[in-house]
Length: 436
Image 1 (tube, rainbow, N blue to C red):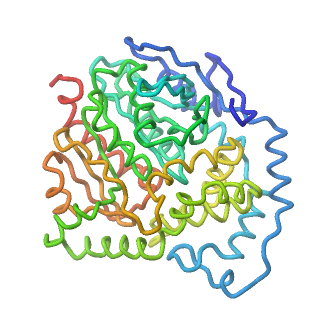
Image 2 (cartoon, rainbow, N blue to C red):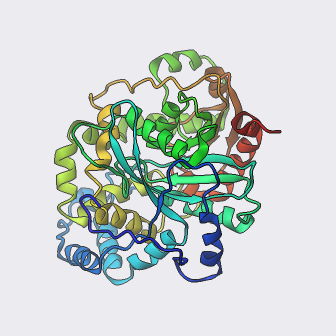
Image 3 (cartoon, rainbow, N blue to C red):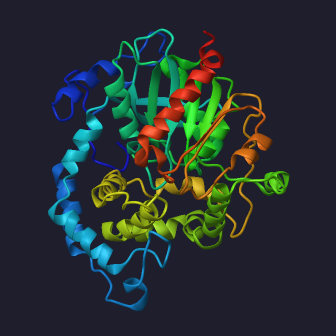
């Protein structure tokens, strides 16, 4: 695998923890008839020397001396970022309590695959990783869940667990495909001769779904980078419906909704997003304008990467009732980026989105005819009140609103997220597979 020493193992033997859940999950790994390319089964197995090297680098990292900023920081409300004490505690936990192998088992208990796809527009070849829950039902609705930064496909593990508990492979109403989006984690291009674009990344996912046999119709769902990719996918003929849990408006769209009434609770969400736009998006500008410098800095020390990523994982989550996410979850995400050597690759989206300081986000103009759904969670860096959504999307067939959850909705509020998705998929099923 490019830039990593991670092993891929093909085997029919169930992977994971060896418990009942892992044994049952193997039945979800059988592809339905109609696939054009057989993906290779994949097992994540980071060499022990790399795990030990990571621990040694964590142990050797120097954390700055106490100063005003790093002793008064609070990432839950965006004050200065992560604190020195938080970083020291996280470093100690990484060394004493964190178990990477346990997280590998958590990932490997699901059917995982690799597949090469070539996009028609320019011939770029992608080696894509994805996890899946395939159904044996003929009327199952295909859906792909798309993550962003600093997340990974692991954001959707709680949702996949809920589905596996609720259904069997014989009763699951959906084909669930959860990729590592292009150039993130375990997915990469064979040749990085040019900057990846949102259009090419979307084309790669669309080609993946076609190769898996879903060329007649599928649903795209995404937040963060995945939100932009889902909007791009909405223009592919094969994508019949799309659902978002984050949406950035263009200035033209803002003008359309400027005089529409919203509720007091919606105004709180709008104010939160406006505050983020004022003080919270500096990281994105750095990603987009100086990706080389930043990635080289962060890849020099795993503790530096922990501070940068941990800040966002905490700040963008709903911490009003209890701390989220756990330090174990944060360490699993940082370790994943580090051990897959993928941080630099993952910067591509920001170069397209924020290549100019204070610039306008690109207008992806998602489909206004295909069924669209939106889920609104209270702690989100870009929100879309219902009256605004209905004004902008005459094709909207579902709008869900929740009292808890943040930017990483599938990870933090999987029950609410899944409830929304099941209702949306029920509404669009006829549009996707043409059956009642």
